[in-house]
Length: 335
Image 1 (cartoon, rainbow, N blue to C red):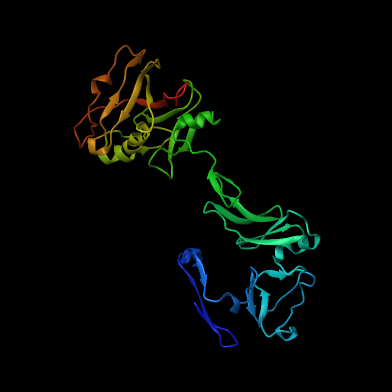
Image 2: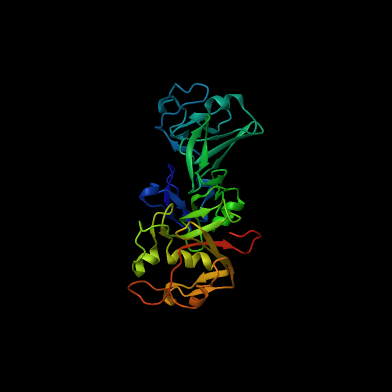
């Protein structure tokens, strides 16, 4: 940027990086980089939140309702407060939202402007003004008479930095965190940062089971094609198939057990447990891998499909089970 002052002297300033956000971000200057000036003596610098002007209507904390016009100033141009800022007694700028607090000079108190872009803190009876910016996962808001950045639901922190409260990879991690009721939850397996919804069985068999198939009636058609089984179908609270792309991601992030619960026409219950369970990716047609079998079914049907690829009505490879869940074997009790 090239400048010329009232005395006709020229100078320039440069920044080695310059970037602005998109329209959604109101073209906010997001980066300026390292600053360099040709002649420091030729510039009068204004404090933060002030500009060099002879036209801005300025108000003070002592008399915020009275505008100081340009004609009342002794200088044709000088540093003046802008926007929702007022001039304080010690020549600092402060948001109008904090005018009353400023007069009390409360040590250690902070004051955030209406856009949550500046933070003024009272230290040693002086206001220290600093830049302030909300996290992408926070909202600028006023709550209980305090304006600041607040982390969005599901995140925790001071508003400038926000992190997810819990990032569960499966139902077992939710179970360990204190979720003890059966129901649909959001988990975040590897490769799915936005999360997926699954039914978690928390109240039986030790808890922490991630259900990927439930088939209890003929209400949902399971004679479907490859894409249906890849993406999933049905209602998570009722009969459904989670989806092979999700099952693959889950079963390759940890070591899991597989439990299959069965009920016959006489309402007798049976179960089968496999010590390990995983499937490969779509390129390998979701090939099955299971470990040793235990349970009370009296037979082991799934081991015969070990190392076989997945089958649907439009791709002939192999097998299904009536009700299946996953549990993590890396922790006592499982997931």
